[in-house]
Structure formats: structure tokens, C-alpha cells
Length: 266
Image 1: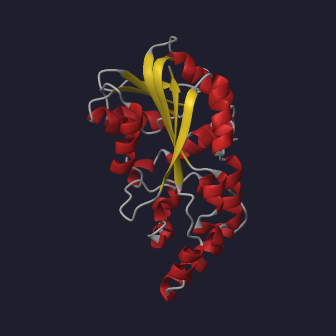
Image 2 (image 1 turned 30 degrees about the horizontal axis):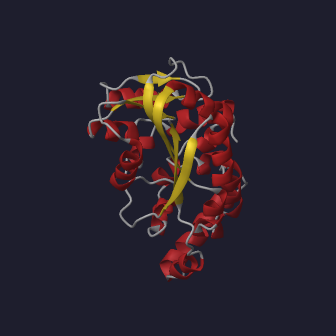
């Protein structure tokens, strides 16, 4: 998995325009709330909160939630948007919070940027008094089955390498002390509002927009010569000719596009 040294500059760069195309999707927020909450009056922590989109959305639903992230640029935006939330700069592998001070935690599209998930999950377990840890991520299998591989094969292969499968996450969570670990697939909808990597499943023209690509870390992490430029030309041609629908159909599967993972500390 990527190191802090790799990720911080990437997200400091992405953070400058991140909120142009990235926002909390209501359906994902609703599922996180469903998995996470027993009582809204409890205290929650968002690990790898980024610019605070999901932290803020959960707060607006009445949850008392803090955010922690490694990127100062992301946190600067989070503080401007949601000044009432407590924001902390820090590494998930060494949280600065007292033991048992939270009743639940979330991690949305960030576990693949944690170099040592076992250590990070132990830290999450430590700061929880009890409650659930809700992760939203994608597995290597899900990435591999996404039609974008047709146009950016090396980039998607790179994305697959840094993602953890459910079994790996389950093992790390179990090793950290969590129990009752379970998963539920998430399928991208046509009206998805958060434009992350798989968000263009039904809107392929989305990837032609440089602002959309600027908010997706895979387009920053990967550097394979002119693959992106060549792939974009091929994608535009297939959109213009209608062939894109055949490509999308070829990659249809039942794995889901992303995955909710829920673990508990009793």
C-alpha cells in the first residue's frame, strides 16, 4: 500500500480542486449512518476524512463526529466548510486521541492509502470504547472488473494493487480485536453525486473532463507514459460512435462496484 510520503503530496495537490467534483453522496451517507449509529448523541471519528465531505454530511444529520487526515490542504478546506467540527492532522497509524474516547468510526475511500492497516485498525480499536467501525472501499476484484480497464489498463492494474480485498481487511480487523466483521456490496447508481473512480459507470463522458480526473487519485498516482492521453482519445471515439455501451456491457458483474465493511468492538 502507498506510504504517507507518497500520499500526502498527492492529496495536497488534489485538495486544491477536490471539492469541484467530490461531494458526499446521499445514498452512501445513508448507508454509513445505518451501519454506524446506535445513538446520535454518541461521539464518532472519521479516519482519512479528506476535505470533510462525508464528515460534514454525517454531522448535518445530527452526529457528533470529528475528522482526522494526513493532508493539511484537505483539512484547510474542511475547516472552511465546517468550522464547527473538530479537525485533526494526523496519521491513522498513530492517533493522538485518548483510549476509549469514541463510540464508532468511519473510513471512506481511504484504507488503500494506509500503509499498515493492522497498526491503523489497532489504533481505531484503541480509541473506541465500543461500537462499530464502518469502511467504504473497493476490492481488487471490483477494480479489475470495471470497464475503465479497457482504456487505462496499467492505471487500473495499479489501482488494483493498492486495494485490499475483503479477506485482507477482515484479517487486519480481526487481528486488531474487532468482531462480527461483515461486508455488503455497493452498486454505483446513475445519479451518484460523488465522482470517484467508478462513478462514471453509466456516465463515461465524465472522464473526459479534466476537473473530474483531477479529483481522482488514480490519475495522479499512475504514470505510464501517454496511456491516459491515448486512452482518452479511444474513450471519446467509443462514446461518439456508441461502442462504449458494448464495452460497459462486457464488464457487467455481480461483485458490486464498492464494498461496505462493518466491524464491531463489543
